[in-house]
Image (cartoon, rainbow, N blue to C red; front, side, top):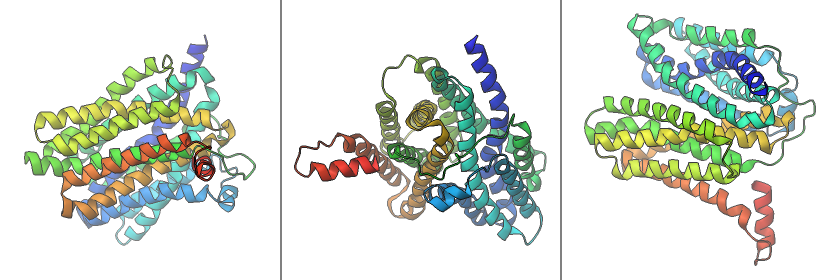
Length: 395
């Protein structure tokens, strides 16, 4: 009976979550087509970058008392604001002379989406029993990957129907459907403007995953072009990444409840596998078969890692803090993703795509090592009190 009740609760939640997530998955590709083909791909890339900068802004907003007070009782208005921002972005792509508005709208969308992701996650933790949370987070990671896998196909279908100028209308309509699909206005931030405590290791872990996954995404097409002289294989590799994630999530979901490994070491093991996969891509991805196998293997770890991070967040923070904690987790991923994108843009002309990808893997491995080592510093060693206090304050 309880399992049936949990499934119904997740199904109801998933309706609003899907209308919220689909625009997020559609926007980057839709912007590239709708704005890039008419006003230049450099401008389109800048607008996409604004989405990530907006997401990172959540860390600043929730890190100060004034920002936390601003977020009090934002409720349903947040999702209506996302719909308005998406509509403004669509209008800016259609009306000449409004591209400056597109940049502002994209920045706002990034910020609001990160907050909305935290809100939805809090909703799910509120309606599920504690023992069911990890299992449904795992299945939800699979659903999320399916959405990301389907989104390019949706955009491709619209382009084939000569609807390229109107691509940003669909994300706006989906965003409008989210507040309409919500069962009740969520309580997104607690009444007190107190800072949330602890869990900084989760932010670092999320940033490391962002470095790895974005490092793969930005490098795979140049690697396929330079090594295989087959640029189209980059798209195939990205599809294999998503397919692998769906498979990995489907395997992990039924197993998650039986795992006795605590969330922290579990996440570090998965991140280590992802970092190793990225390093192998940089060192040995020289054939079509190798690139395909590496892409699939990396993907298999993506959904389980996302599920484990979400579950760790739900157990690390009090329920009233879940909204802001999940939003910060979402934003910290963007920090890592922006790092990889910037590093590739700056260093790949000098080092090459493969060497820059290896650098991303090394940076991620260093972050993983820091997360693993800092809490283990002993108080009784010389200087241990100083380093121990630093470890407690940052981790």
